[in-house]
Amino acid sequence: MTSSIPAIGTRTADGATLQAVFLDLDGTLVDTEGFWWEAEAEVFAGLGHILDDAHREVVVGGPMSRSANYLIQVTGVDISLPELSVLLNAAFLARIRRGVPLMPGARRLLAELAAHEVPTALVSASHRAIVDQMLHSLGPEHFRLTLAGDDLVRTKPHPDPYLTAAARLGAAPERCAVVEDTLTGVTAGEAAGCPVVAVPSVTPIPAAVGRTVVRSLEEVDLPFLRSLITESRGGVH
Image 1 (cartoon, rainbow, N blue to C red):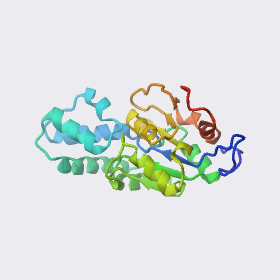
Image 2 (cartoon, helix red, strand yellow):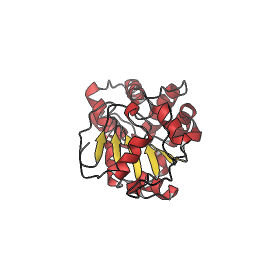
Image 3 (spheres, rainbow, N blue to C red):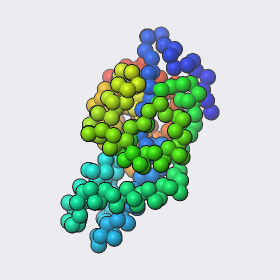
Image 4 (cartoon, one colour):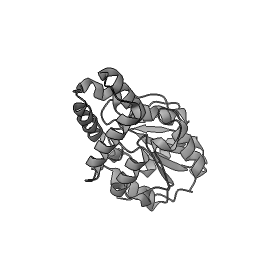
């Protein structure tokens, strides 16, 4: 389904324009958060440690360096962060090479943004090799720009990924809508000054000023994203 609204350059009555849309990857566009946990559990089992499910909520949505460091600390496993990162990436890549399921509404939203020529960036904390592999399922033609966690010195929850995406697309952050599924990603988008749509996947995300929380991407379309730019950002949605 594609809406019949005007092209992206059309301004609203108050002069506001949606200049770009920034989309997270894992848990937002593709249903892979479970894949990450399976990969982590598999790797740590091979190292002689059974991960407690309580750790899952801590590691979800964060960059691999943070998640891996946390798991090293709580298990006491004798392995370096670079060594563990290689093992985790390999285990995860083995899973996604078989294809990844898209989240409900993801394919329709990407098609709608492409049909209206909305500059769209994929902004992920995952490593470049993983982002590039998952682009086979999403379609690289849907994105003007892709940013991976290892493309920058600092990734989410820092604002750097979203500030970089806006700068490279020549857009103002406050005119760029961010769609994220974790509090880590939401924090990054908000720190960059972008209006943020939270679509919680594994853990709840509370409503807050300037933040819109929805249940699914099926509630998100281009008119909805444009409304985030035109509406006052002083309320809680």
